[in-house]
Length: 441
Image (tube, rainbow, N blue to C red; front, top):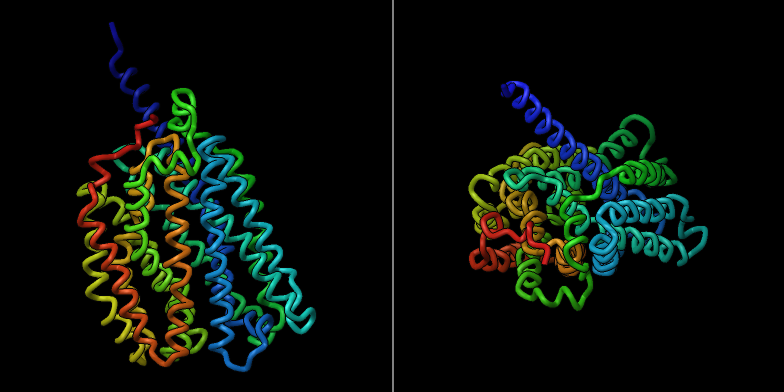
């Protein structure tokens, strides 16, 4: 006789082992993603302190504008990183690409930590700072495509939206970690004068050490089954010429990213400067407001990812596009006029209610557009180009309008960008129902 109970128990054990394997892979991949984004966001979190060391100007708005310009300039190399690490991921494996990208981030963070100030070496100081940020931009350009591809391929078909949402959980978590370090240094360990003199170097040292730890962890990752199977079935075509065989998919990545990335960088990197300089809160108030809103944003990601697994990706994107177009201008206008830190927190959280409709699922939507053989490059390169044009430039555009005395022009700019993406959302197919995840070609 067949022991059905034993068979069921064996099947249950296999299911549990499979879930544990997937969760472990997603955890390790996500931790590395968090470390990379911590390193990257430490720059914006501490810009208020280190900007005077690199840009000697009595006007703090001009100092922040210079820092924002370097922040935007690093995005110019992200397409190169998207191509380089996407090529590595499609030809040599997701694990190698992910490991190399975090090592690259380690070098960039370490350079910033040891760079002398303008008072010591003159114009060489901002030049070295820009070089370090270029290295970090190269790393981050490759991280997104490889990470999105890896997380989508290790997730099971029923929960891809949920699992892939952890890319932005850890992405936002990287910024939260940077803010936690800032809060600890501000309130427990250093005075504002010490932070401006030398304390701003500490987070970059921490980032370099964390990146080494993440690289060691990523070396233990298992390669995805999808990549292994595709490698056996077809020759990889992770190249620019191969990517041009998918013009519709490339256009979709650009279109669905443009408004979302502008909104994301507005309510993350620029919001700290906006709340501090335009709204007028203290440094501590600003830090707590941004920290609280980012915790809220983090909690939304898996919720929206799970919703997309139930109702599809397109309705969630449509929600972001419609609400972002309608609500962005009123939220930013009201935020600038408020005098209450709690109201400011609520307004930014209100923005995250619709921005999360993009952030939570944009990675899986892009991954579901491309076959395995070119997925990492297809996700990473057009995304990096779009982020370079519309995401990384958002803080600089906003500050430029502020220097002209028309800060409110940026509100209309952002709302218009979201509306352009909304047009794409209304015309695209729902990738949950028409996915290319199992195509190797």
